[in-house]
Image (cartoon, rainbow, N blue to C red; front, side, top):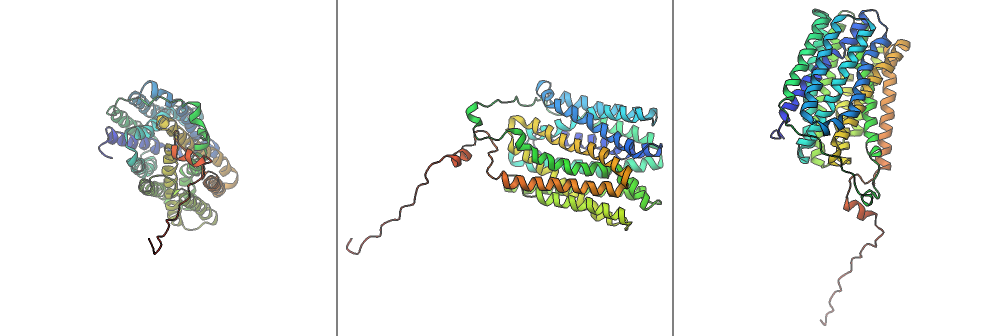
Length: 422
């Protein structure tokens, strides 16, 4: 796995890109709240970031085919970092929304390219571990940068966080220069006879995409409002504990995402840990809602963070591998785009919609609604497991086609026993 060309620079670029994102993810909403803005606007700062992220991700596969991974990723890293300095101009609503939107453009292109590049560079037998290792670097980045952003904001002020986020993104740009200069594989249009019995691509990726979206919506609420919610429970050490909880979520996600990839490689196909991961995520966000609603000790949130983060990490890896497994190799960039759109759209919707819920019925209500959404995603996965048991997931899958042919099965003939006279 480590010998694949460009794999290590890609991982470092992932670390830096998500580090820049994580530094500002809880800080921008918190800065908006401190400036006197409503919870709805605070959530909208993350929501518009994710909206431009998703819009960019739609067009990224085409750019990867025409321009190539290297130039797209370098330009995206610059776009992620430089607009962070725009927040130095003030905390007015236009500032929060405009520069969040510009940063989202860079983040959208970078996330699609990174995930697709792993599938381009890595042999199939190592793909589960490689995507799991991608999650490890992502998780370490979140563990370090989520609490660091909050710590810097509370000790030396918000401007330092903005500068740090820009600097870390530039590290990603430098590492992207060392990535092989390759382009995404051209899209293959199969012949009509090859499409007989093959499910449309959107059906193959819909359910894993919804699984990611359901959990990322809760993650949007957790990352945006958990620090503020913990401050209400414990005003003295709330900021520190809130940052610690975000680190716990990132660590659990990192460990179990890699473990899920190892299991997928051993089985030769993904899916074994998807439903357990969704159950864990549901239990975690539901426990968060109960702790905040009942005023229990904030240390119960440690267990909630482990459950939610671990389940989220499992679902991330299983969903990405499932999309890679179900679609042809020539469409890995589309699979990466769909996965990232599901992740980022869910995060944006969660921070915006559940932020509006929090403004009406408090943070506990927002997390409770998040738990219901995760449960709906779980039901979708169970239904897909039952209904789609015999779905053909690959073009030119001869074995699957033969199973559908109405041919009589040969009967085994019993060997005649010789008589005593023979």
